[in-house]
Image (cartoon, rainbow, N blue to C red):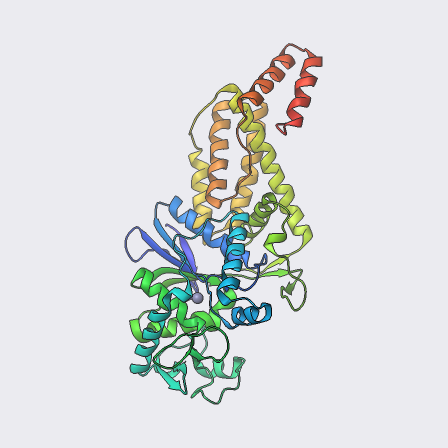
Length: 442
Ligand SMILES: [Zn+2]
């Protein structure tokens, strides 16, 4: 059995089989760039980056797209508030976003579509929906007619009646049905574009569908995002795709849970927000990454300082062992790519169970113990393969321990230190030891 993942569309664990052989197309809803991202926003940024790495480790050829929503009321309001243009606001926070992406150890997606680059495609898409009877224009506002598709509610597993009574419905006399959602918004303030329906701006739900279609042409393999996007955003993406393309936009819908701060939802209005930019260093970025990756991805994380410190200790333990072994192997001149097949298989087995990261964490702890024992007993053959395996797993998870091989000068001191110890020349051993401590080698 290969990779098994939980598909939110079927609410079942399913074996992962891409639509086109070895090729995996994945799309994850990106940020609306009007503010800095907090550590909860970083959860999907970290999880899907790891997912791409893991799929590549399994041998898939992955194309990962994630968009930038650079037009939205929040951006328009911020522009008005600060006397800047929407473009200036969006560019500033997009740059800040990618700084944060880097800080938590994620790579930039392969494709980064911007909503404002697809305005024409969006207006013609909306126009087609209108012509097809799936949308209607009321004085320049265009709404999607949810009753025009047969399985609205398929993702959130609700029937229309429940949705209607359950959803927080904004009073809008223009809509035929309270669940109908905005595709084109007539606007008086802020940036606007011309369209067959009049001046305005496109809605968020349309953006992702149109960009997906333009970038990938057809149904994609994986659509991801935070759990909170399931309804209405993803449900509405599916409805539009159903209407014109007769598919669910993606074969697998995967959602990651929220990250709360000590049991409370992080929000600016509550004042309990930790921004990624405020993490003190790239090491703290990696500790956050570890905390997020080793928490079951579909569950809520209740973040606290205690939890962070727990992962800090864990991270420092990995770092210590990594450093010792890397330097010792360098000193001994041992080079090898050997892996421990048994441990690699165990890693795959756990990851393939819908990313059973808790078992992976146990596997890593076991490897660290074994590595330390092998180092003491100088069993270099086994040490090297276990060490390489540990390194490989960290690499797939994207956890960087920030340890580099020693420079020539450092290696010389390290060698002198070892020689002095062998010769029981304690005075020199001490001297070299201090030099190595100063250089953070020991
Ligand atoms: Zn989206």
